[in-house]
Length: 438
Ligand SMILES: Cc1ncc(COP(=O)(O)O)c(C=O)c1O
Image (cartoon, rainbow, N blue to C red; front, top):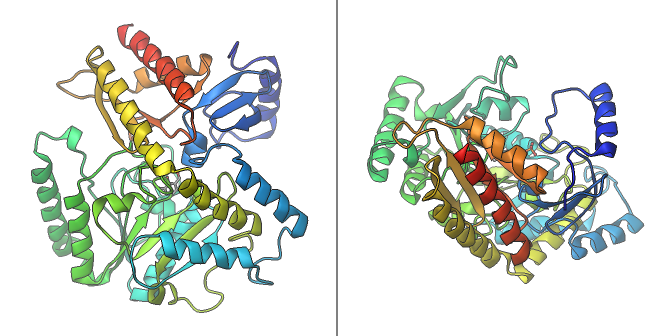
């Protein structure tokens, strides 16, 4: 399926790219797409790839599902943009109503829209501050919330996200997030020791009455698909309730079926006060959402939140189709199936390859963590880089994650066929074995 990456046409475009585009925006695959469908992507040189990255978790419904493209064509023929702040349009209201219905919690909710994940995070923080009258925001170590100033301040990876970009937003604090693979403690012991630190934090750093919100990814995305225990998440929520701190679930990477539930937080038995969503909500259209308890999200006055493109008509009609598609095609079950197949395949491989430290997944949020040896568990970034290079030449798009870049993460479209999944797994498994033996 793949002859050479980059091929001749891609090399010509790369030259132009180096000339006209700065180095800052990174690229995983050194070629250029011409067509994509389902879980397959074809490049300018006719190479076809199986997509295990899904535009970093943006394409749970796959590339160009027909319902979405039909709705977009229809919308293009009616109107493109009036800006919701100038003249309103119905799809915005329909989508808000839909998200209020499907997000966790029986309470009255309201929703508004933006264009990117980082913007949703920015606005969640603004709303939390306005509602509580407090300034402090707590996020978690290894967390990722975006590249704008507040979201970057809440992010916890220095290179490449924060290096030499400070000063960062004041009144932001980091709490440790459990990482059971990297402790000698039992999960409950680790959870309890972290929770104890949180209580000390309120004595040593800042009182709880000054904290507006705690923002948490229910499963860490960029941080390496790290999965906390329900007990830990529930205890954090309990701290929030005790001190009237708002709990923000950042579902930007975990949402819309990725973990086998519509929202990952549903695995943990916690109802958040505010939810941020983006990525797979729009099937590739730039749209994000903030849903919250009605009284909380109504705290800002007219004009205090919003934006020219927030909740564009195209984004809204795409998102409405996405939600129907997930439900109609039963993609939550498919997500679980993909996760189970992954676990079976790569746990078997772990027995042949001691550099595989851990295979973990929640639904189709799947990761393999690579280490140098099983005793020290030292991260093996170089091995992951080799594997990624090798699979690309064999027609598979995969990305890394983690503070040390030593984790391979799978965010494949949930519409991937069994054959494509099997083929992708084989390419990945072969590359892992080859690189581990070298
Ligand atoms: C959990 C989480 N929050 C926020 C963001 C930022 O989203 P965007 O890149 O659309 O600004 C991301 C992006 O990867 C994310 O994974």
